[in-house]
Each structure stands twice: as C-alpha cells, then as structure tokens.
Image (cartoon, rainbow, N blue to C red; front, side, top):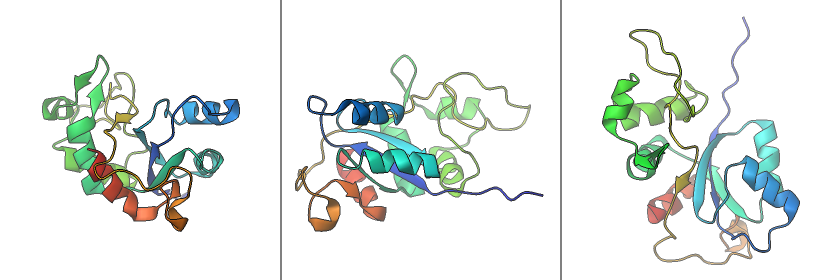
Length: 175
C-alpha cells in the first residue's frame, strides 16, 4: 500500500498591484488565481506549487494557515459562483456540518482542495470531497494598521515573501 503524502497548506496573498508586473510573473500569479491586489488563495504545498510561489515571491506573501483562520475566512469571505455568500446551509447540503469541519479537514489533509467549481457526485450519506461552486480565491480588505514595506521581504522588516504561521495575524487584520 502506498502512503499518501500530506503537504502543508499555505495561504498566499497578493500584495503588489498589476501595472509593473512582468509577463512571466503575471502568468504565474494567474495560475495561482491571484489576479488582483489583496486576493488570497489557499494552496497545497506540493513542489510544483512551491516553485510558482518562489517565482512570484516579490509580489506575494505566504505562510502556513491554521484551521481557525481558514474557518473564519470561509465564513466571512467565502463566495459562491454568482457572487453569493458561502452559507452554512450550502455546506450542509453537501454533507459538511460546519465551517470548522471543512477547515480542519483541509488543513489535516483529508481533502485536497476547497473548491470544486461544479457539482461533484457524492455518495449517499457521505460528504463531498470539496465545496462545490466555491470560488477558488478570497477577496480581502487592505490590512488594518497598514503594511510596513512592499519593497522588502518579511525577514528584513517588510511584508513580502515567506512569513510562516504569522500569516494568520495578517489575514485576521484583512478580514
């Protein structure tokens, strides 16, 4: 039996705008679904995704997201196709009991992605392997308290690049 590799889950937030972005970086950000400033996606930290994150490192910030923060993002910023809010009733229709259950399942690696994009057949009595019709990105507000610097990396006092679990504090300031 082959063991399933569980990669860490990362929140990736685009902090820099569109006009001066080189084409190759813009294409990478497009693949990550980060098409506008202050949008966030939650990705699985596989080697190919980490390569894309490293390539766009000067336009984004990223780190490990925890289940509580992800549940709060789903509650407050989750949107369905048609720009409707993600509701508890929608989750329950697909077999999930709460936002926290979805967040824990994703962070623990039980499900591989949050968004399906379309209706996914679920067996009777089982929950869906993701949230159908959920948009694969979250639109956030600019952070309360502002940013330090969009030209420096987090390790030297700026806001760009890898910030580890401290990404959760930034996300809470942006909700």
